[in-house]
Length: 116
Image (cartoon, rainbow, N blue to C red):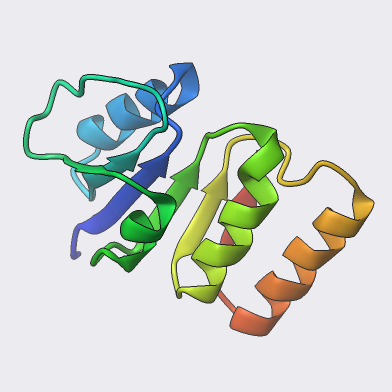
């Protein structure tokens, strides 16, 4: 099995928990993190992105969205449109209209979208 390459958008409490989960998996690797606040990552090989756009342009398979809910729908939609699988930590939208757009986008691109 090939390693699944992940990026994380949002490196607060849940982002750090997801980082640990990825590091514990023999089938996944964390490639990059995008976070608007200052942070330090224990793994110095992880790329620190300066923008979400930079994150989605990287050679990664999936993005974990654990950022603020105010940008979750935008990030989910952009990640799906860029061909990435998406795992959304937060509610993926601020309202029903945003959620409908997320669902429409997911159906169009036929990638995996997971919401917990």
